[in-house]
Image (tube, rainbow, N blue to C red; front, side, top):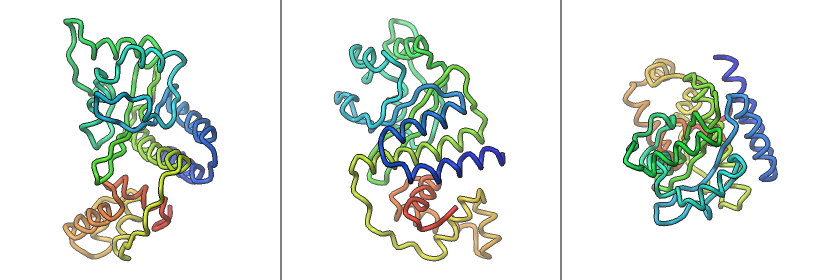
Amino acid sequence: MLQYAERMFNAVSTFESLSTQKDVTDKLATILSSFGYSAFLITNVPEPPLRLEPYILLNGWPKGWSEHYSKSDYYKFDPVATWCRKSIDPFEWSEVPYPRGMNSRAEEVMNVARDFGMIEGFLVPIVRSSGFHACVTMAGRSVDLDPSAKRVVHVISMFAHARISALGGSKAHDPVALTSTEREILSWTAAGKSSWEIAQILNIAKSTVDTLANRAAKKLDAVNRTQAVVNAIRGQYISV
């Protein structure tokens, strides 16, 4: 567990200093490979019939897969992409429901992906309170799906998306007015404390912790606590 946490903190401190898209690509490839992932993609997630290609922010897919994916018009049938547009929580590709048999195009997408070495996959949705959807998705032949590993990959993915978006010229958000208690709650959340534990530390009710955490998340344009913590760290409202 400590090893996973150390890897996460090292990655978090690195991403903010990266100054080019290639730097982000190389760093993310190195980090994800340590978890067994050999392929990855950072992209916005438009609704079909829009195509995926114009919305890709960083492409680390295997050679030939992007071309085949585009030529075959797979995006509209891709069950992982479909599930991503509905989910706010990270998920393994194997958890995605899709029709099998009867010449299913969804099944074709998954089978051909395996032919390209993407056997086990994991996807981190990036969702804002406005409903904007993006994702960091990755795959490999034999990956580390330990719950602690997935939590680390979740956080690292959000930082990688934020950095590649910033390098692409995304506008900075206006300063967020977090109260001191909201900052404390986010700081303890970053340290891995539960709502009940934070309530004991701050000597307030658990329901108050939940209310203030949700309020802080809304201020930070986040849809869950993990995203709120990431946005708070990036905005330097809290430190790790």
